[in-house]
Image (cartoon, rainbow, N blue to C red; front, top):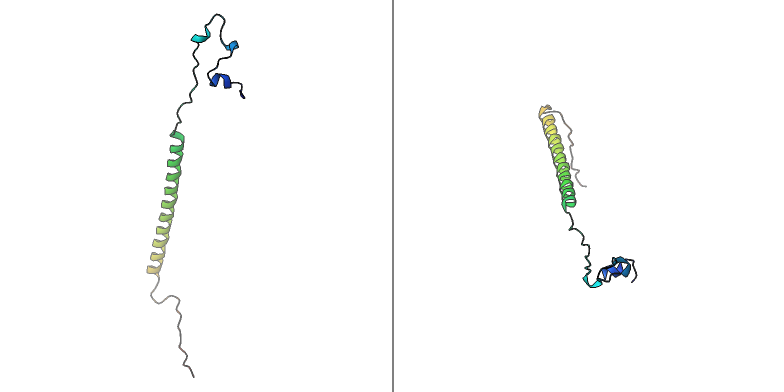
Length: 94
């Protein structure tokens, strides 16, 4: 017996735990059983993290949409002749 409650866990009742005048054969050992695990916290945390991720993704999509709309509006409002152009000339070989 390595731990103080090992005797009780093994079903052996030490004599000092039995009240005087009690027949040791009538003593019943009741083992404490842990309550089943409550999954409310982990499930709530998972749903909260998933909802936060969805919120961040939707916010990024909204910002990208606004930026694209702004760029489209600016491009449509600019005069047709204004812009940057690059002309390339081909050199003839010798």
